[in-house]
Image (cartoon, rainbow, N blue to C red):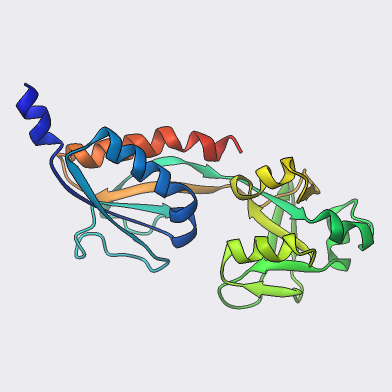
Length: 216
């Protein structure tokens, strides 16, 4: 029995995730997994390209957003929730911000990999689209957060990335009733009838660890 457990925990696990979510959350899940599975090694690639996990020999991909690979299996880990934030320094000298339409008079910082950025914000049954030339557009959420911390405007961020900064007073959440629709996060792996124990083990760690993201 003991030798079978050791054998089941041996081997290597290939893991991929987006660069930002990987370094802010998946790192911790990998560390916990390695402590629980001491005979397993991990090779992780953090990249924003869509990895072909079957042909590239990857065991698990952590993906944010709607899934496209219908031939793969997936376990939903949870959802990323979002908010609008600005530095107190910016808000002190900015126009009033009491309703969503007021955003049209504010500087905004956007995460926009390509094209003209549009924020689609919802509040209950209401939907509002904000399309304007941003003060700054970047292709990295961490960079957008850093620019907001510099007092350059309002930014839309995943709550797990911003709420600790609200707690220490360096960011303020604005228009708290408005946010983008939550975005699903999945662990994706090759579709097989028999799930490798180490893959199941890592997915279980991810599902348990997602609570600190969801509770932000």
